[in-house]
Length: 204
Image (cartoon, helix red, strand yellow):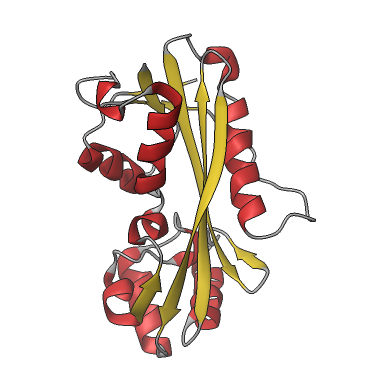
């Protein structure tokens, strides 16, 4: 099987590379709206499955596409990627000094029609952050491609995250332990996956 990563996220690319899997990257624009009645993990799984559906027509029989979506939830509020500095500041101001949940939904869709959708949850605890710390992070990290306006691997994670309950890699954008085991259930040992010798990106 050939693994296709349906994401332009440098963090997901690095995680798959570190996992030892070869893959190619294929990109399709997908609307990321979701029904208002969905909550928490349901949102992440819905978006991952919706992304995978956009690839069905392009998948060869020997290909498997991996799609993922990471959301940050404070209570039942979903914090997606901030549109600008003001929204990023508002998100981080809400998150500081509190615990919140990060959900990553993943869909593995095979070219032969088999599919599995799952999610993983991590609770992240932030210490109180000053307005100056928040402003410094936004100015230096430009966190506009990250759910909740932050990356745990960034400066704000190093100085602000006091503890995690669950997978650190899930917070980065991909619960690789689950990906590995679900791939094994679908197609056998993931080490047998074939892909590009080095990641190549195609836009459909």
